[in-house]
Image 1 (cartoon, rainbow, N blue to C red):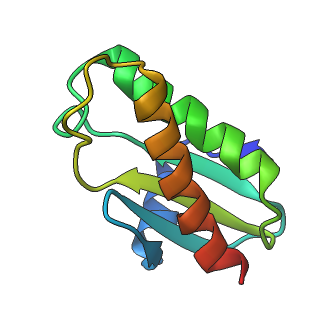
Image 2: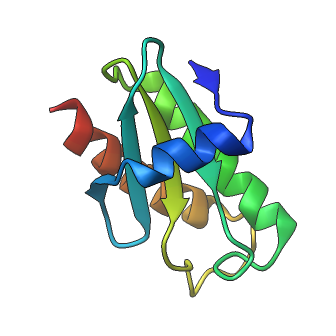
Length: 109
């Protein structure tokens, strides 16, 4: 799966609207000939860079393991994950992974 890189690509997909959402994430989708994904993790919801990078890695990992229809996707963090002792704890990774699986399942169905 390719990654979205330019600002124009991100703006086009974000303008297409929300295809699915969970408690912490929103998934934007736009028709595209090849599957592509982008991730938006605002500092407002994940203050530390290590947390933002951990979430991005989980998004890319889960997106590779779930068969998705050909389209351009953006996963956007809508609210922060609170109550985790460490920015890269296994509990945080499991919580993010579980919610991302639910998010992608809504679109794949």
